[in-house]
Length: 151
Image (cartoon, rainbow, N blue to C red; front, top):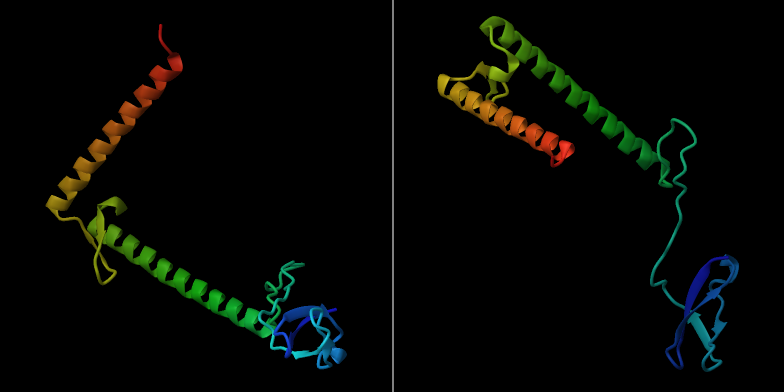
């Protein structure tokens, strides 16, 4: 049975009661002053949606057309995104083959195209990789020394 609200016109008390929908508009006795109270506009409304998924169907928020629209939009976005990703991969492979450089030596330009790194950029990449490898070697040595413990 739903909960409805009434407000007493005599004492001003606002109260709730469990009443069937058919009797929702009927006056209700005020628990404070015993006067007849009139139905009030609800201060909040609550509902429960079934979130159980019993198969490959869409999530149920209670509004099936809305769920289907969301699923359709998400599916279209995913399809468009994967199409763009595949185009970028193909372009990157094409540049790698024509320029004869590995993928890590390519730079993605603002327009989405790829080009080989300039000599200065290549030098920065090599320096960064050298620092990374040195840090990883140091980290491995530290782990080994902790594992072996003091002797």
